[in-house]
Image 1 (tube, rainbow, N blue to C red):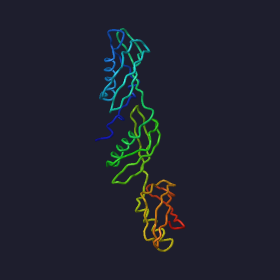
Image 2 (tube, rainbow, N blue to C red; image 1 turned 120 degrees about the horizontal axis):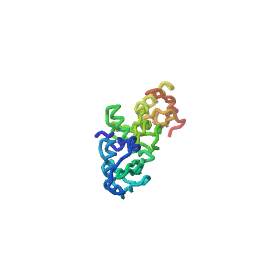
Image 3 (tube, rainbow, N blue to C red; image 1 turned 180 degrees about the horizontal axis):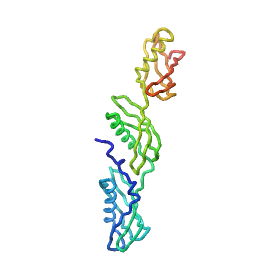
Image 4 (tube, rainbow, N blue to C red; image 1 turned 135 degrees about the vertical axis):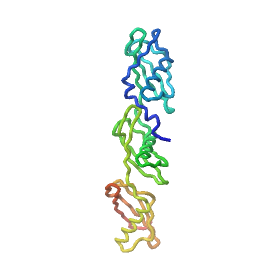
Length: 251
């Protein structure tokens, strides 16, 4: 399934400014006709109608009168307000304006990240998770992780565009050093320092390429286990430099 085909694709940029005219025989637009007209206008912007539009009451044909309705898309319900702007005989002109969420849900962000990875890297991650909801503002950043072949990879995510409910994201991968590579580097560095490699070195997981990130590994030497602190000191593209410090005493 193309995960980009979702509620996030619905844009109201033109809908908000559009005026809808409707001819009536009396002094009100009945709720069913109002629902149908709102659905028609939304469909004109999306190239498809929302799943449903319901209005609880009629819209009185007087300038300034309002009616708040609800529309459903992709299982979510949103409100839309119709406001009468002009009345000319039996013709009522009204604008419609949806009430958009103030935040973007972390799951919506995760779906966008997954779609971006599919498009840019041409593979489908096993899963994507993001840490939090964010304000619906351009330039807001957050952190997510995707899983591929059982390994988690962190990414920085930026909201690059806001267009009504629709939004776009930019995804910047954070370089990671696999646990086995970190352990090997620790072993090699110690061998250079003291002339002999430890018996074994183990690290709990990949090391994120973010300056200041620390990870605790363990080495065994002469049967004793020592803790090792690995600290990222520099990142240049996919190259990650780190220092190591072995505990003074075995654990």
